[in-house]
Length: 90
Image (tube, rainbow, N blue to C red; front, side, top):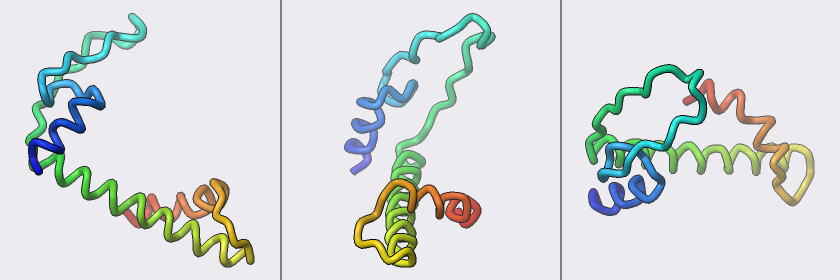
């Protein structure tokens, strides 16, 4: 499981995880290059689990918002309406 999470983060280009170099600087105004902090595999697994829970909760709240408006389909606007409270809850 740990290798799977590291592989996913490596494919996403997260610097320092699997030896993937950091992305090039976009502008000279960004200042010196940011220092890279090592991230353990356990921390990545925890973050992945947190994001799964967050997305599921956002979807569930979007469904409830659509139902409150007597609509059968969930749209982006429904999730946008519940997002401020969701961020406060997390």
